[in-house]
Image (cartoon, rainbow, N blue to C red; front, side, top):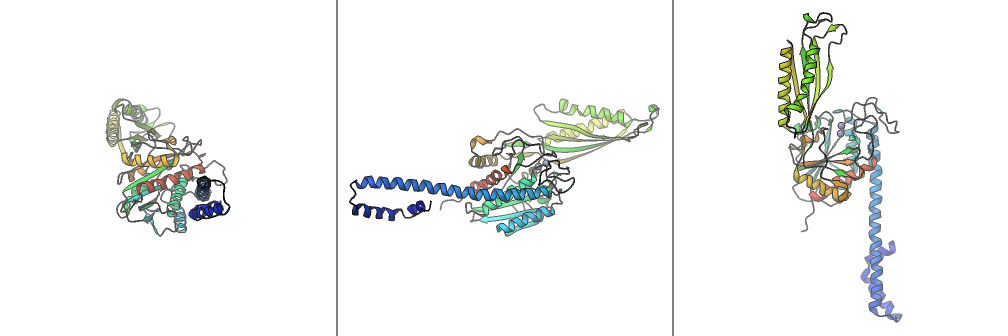
Length: 443
Ligand SMILES: [Zn+2]
Ligand SMILES: [Zn+2]
């Protein structure tokens, strides 16, 4: 290898020496022939040098993959719930400082962290975002790096997302391949749908501005090394509701003296099924689910009160308003017909995640460069799951994508395990997005 590099670096000197030697040796062959042989040698040397560079890169990436795996497993062992990611934030800041990051802001929206890296002079900023929080789930994987905290688990891959963003911060710090500003955004409390709003209230997007924003999520079932996204509505909004029905309780043997909150509530639950099937446009995707019912819970007494809770998913604010309006109308009408009173509390927790068209194309272009076109899809199916990144897309154009976790348990399962093979591909996609969106223009 070393010889090859000397050949390359001193090609003209070699050429001159070769000519002298050929003359002294009185080479019977023509100079053209000898030059051709020498050129072939040089081509071979060039090929070898390229292989060496590629090997160096693999070696560096191997080291990075090892570090990212360690980071991910450390975070997995030490999960923290939304807005309580204090140690997680400390860990992130520690790694960023080791990498040489100086502009690191902490406490953004509670426990959020934003690191900034500037290169060159272009006044354009790309934000990359990861989430940090875990779920209240008891892990059952029995892995050596399983959660050390009872009842808390990284079951949605946010440990991996954080390690991926640290990996991208490593790659971009080590190179001089872009002209502009990158912000690395580590957000708290994604699972609650509150973390991004808190960061925005604290100045993300204003005091800490950016022009476009990208994020990713691990997806079980999608092969490792593949990426999928789609333009427009991608992930559902989530609304929650609670209906409280008040009747008049009494002895189970005397319904004529009571106003049964359970019978009233049962009618409400049945009628709510007609919102999607009879009220909404069939072309609209929506779900209205009743997920919890709680009465007085006395076996020989008629319930005086019933609490009904539920969850709605959809992809547009118009549909959301229609669901709320119809739900209130149904509840009021049925409660009145049963002689009961009812109150409705309706809240919008997650807005729909809508990818901006141009940014989706940018996300796909970077993915094609990293994964190869055959491993990238711009036609991902819409998902009923909600994602707090949607809030960031309300303040700047951007795109969100899924990357493959291979065959694994689903997210939010106590058996879920982030596939460490997905770490480096995710980091490389983020870094490539920055290179492509903030290219160094030839002067
Ligand atoms: Zn989740
Ligand atoms: Zn998640």
